[in-house]
Length: 164
Image 1 (cartoon, rainbow, N blue to C red):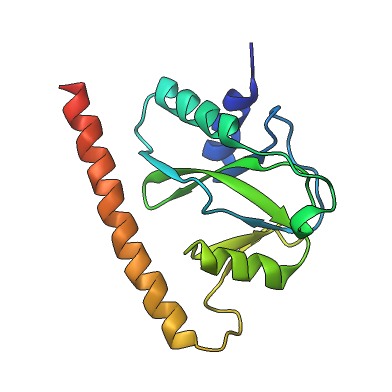
Image 2 (cartoon, one colour):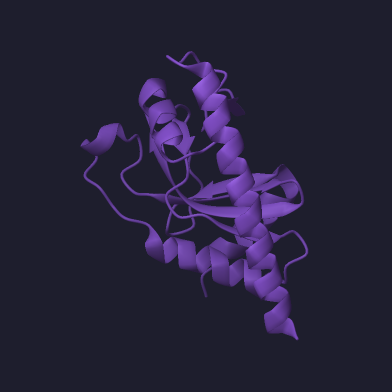
């Protein structure tokens, strides 16, 4: 039995999120920046344990492996990230970058609102970081947040219809 998704549940609900390798091991990196936006799925925090487990395993199956020196990655494989925000659980395929600037640029390209700093254990709003056009960054993030909210609402409605 694979205990990784159960560890993800424990960490998500006790610490607010998790970053686990495909094999379920915790990422013991002391530095680097976690970037998502490669394959996101959202569930309500009231989802069933089976829904959480199935979604985590789907994300695990989407993770790719890279050579250790590729793409400025600290960790040679994509990982499964989870976090709770506004009553929803986010599942995503994530990458860990060594360079903060590359991480921020990748996050912006993926329309992500933040990256996670492993050293200081905190989120960094990508629009708070210096950019050529902060107004455009905020406008893009607001637009994307609105689109994301509409997608989440569609997913929740589909889920409710499937339960009936």
